[in-house]
Length: 636
Ligand code: TSJ
Image (cartoon, rainbow, N blue to C red; front, top):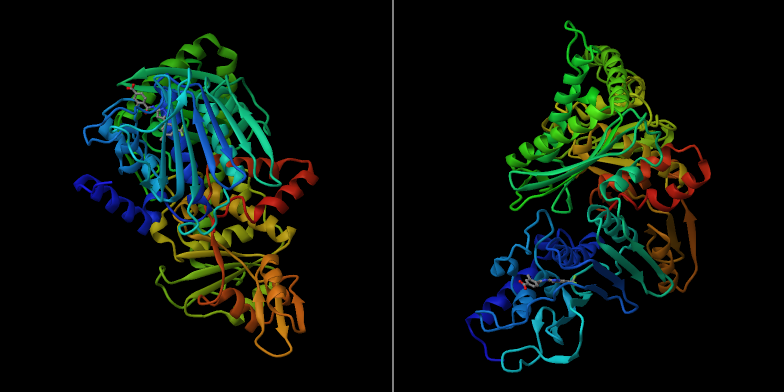
């Protein structure tokens, strides 16, 4: 191939992507790996949104590669103004999307929409087959570089076909990624979510990898209604699922919601099929119109008298589960993780469409309306008692920072350097207090099972002594969801580290703590302050040579292979068994320890976890925790 200015730009682009892959896909961990699939699938979903594709298939192949197929029009293969086939431009140019100036190419936010060229650059090889104009056109790339010779400027043709569509097969490059085995459950939940958001789309998934053979089809003709039903499957609904939709300001809005007897709200926001973990203007618009409309009805029905104050937004949303999905032509995102929708017109559009929709509905369904208002009344009552509890807590605790003296604080006041370890059990807590670096490490021992906050009302949660101490220690207050009473700038520790035994009880405590943080201090998680300590499982001491700590069974297996001589193996059952020195060396020392940063993948997964935790059937719960607590919400 002759080099021209165009091909040099392409090579420079690829090099930038391979040098700093994290900048393009977030990370080179397994999470980043899965993003390759989502990136490719998003293109096929765009074709669905354009109205030309109703089937997408995702296959994890035996050889570790992934194949994504759609039945759309097929990527155009004619010669682009650069002189290359259009499809080759798509796969080799950063942000090729815009070049087509076609509405079918939508820009989305966050980590998505970075372009299939990024996936290509990070794959050892990629194969593309495009069925279009009666022919199967083919292209092949190695580490993002096209290697096939063109035929009169056109892609080679493999054969004839009557079908149309696009098929992409790629193998993530082991030179780039820590691990190249895709994580199946996360892919499944994302594909299922896609199916709920696109009710006329059928998604086929298949895992053909050795020992993992599995297939699943997702088709959710009920759409968002089905999604809300699924989210509420472990709760007791007080009305049916209500669906509203419409268009305003050039923005398509769809929302489904249902009230339950739970004491909290779950509202998920999506823009152009992307989940917005930090919410944003669509959620704000949805919430404000809800508050306004319900208060208006409550006054019309004389449930609120003239002298009564309005219900607050939180009162109105007590027990509410909602999914809001909008399609915006030019979304912008802000926030720590760039997942918060920023377009003001989305707030207006959501208020308008949702407002009109619910008024239409409630005018015809007075019984449902009355049920909803009684949810708000209950909430208002509880709120008033909680306000009292909160004032008491804050005034009492302000001056007696740690009333029962359990917190061993650190000396430094520089939050960016300070760490707090929440340690299960008094004996491990005692060792940790002796072993720590007093300047920067604070220790807070907690005992036994802290309260399961999922089902408890706020005043109950706040009455729990350990939770009180924790909230006070962190320094930033608390509020449900993204409330205003939480001030992350006052956080006193850059790292909050959960330190629990590597057994089922430890996993349970970790999960309860995560649930607590997720409900009352979600920003701590979203902004990456929460970690899980990874104490070793074994210590191996050879007859001659240095002792070694082994952090998991894989490490032990490796050690056994390497060390043929005799060695003694000590298995740690719990943190309490370690001496202060050992605890320092293995778990506290910033130079040697292993921490995993917690990232809640999305509210959907968290909701699955908490749903299981609050259920009454203990055995599946135990299994679930065993299997997932150390993994499901944690990214390495
Ligand atoms: F299938 C897939 F997921 F692997 C995949 C599908 C991957 C990628 C990178 C792209 C696609 C894809 C793109 N499916 N369908 C399309 N459609 C177009 O690119 C297309 C087709 C026709 C026209 C037109 O104006 O005629 C315009 C576009 C953008």
